[in-house]
Image 1 (cartoon, rainbow, N blue to C red):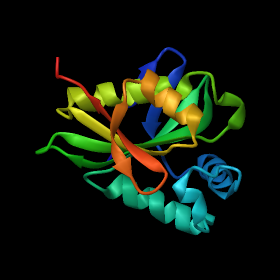
Image 2 (cartoon, rainbow, N blue to C red):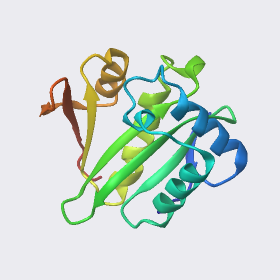
Image 3 (spheres, helix red, strand yellow):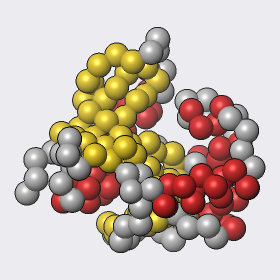
Image 4 (cartoon, helix red, strand yellow):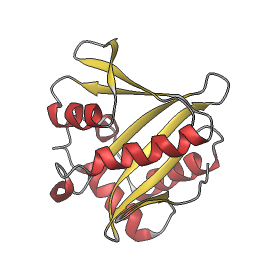
Length: 166
């Protein structure tokens, strides 16, 4: 699903395209085995499989994969998935791949920006899964307004953010 760019000062969310620079950065983040809390790092990726994944997301009517740019640099991605306009809900996944940009509040800002955009499109509830050992992510999610929703699997929970439409 293609969307217009979302801009908040020096932070921009825009559709992830297939330019080589973005794909190489994304691939390096997915291949970094130190990202132990990111489910997608548990599979083997190459440029071909990643290109297919991005194409699939961009062609989907219920998935929106966005690149996160901070001060002009591609630092991560955020995905809104299983977007359901009838149930008015979506699932969210985010990766700040460039480690030097973690802990700066950029994930919180990207979540706020993306959730606000989709809320204006009629989506009221946002869900995400998080490993309980990923304390920095939980803090970022809570700052973005996500709250504990329910347990999930052995060491993870589902968090939920509810917004009313303006």
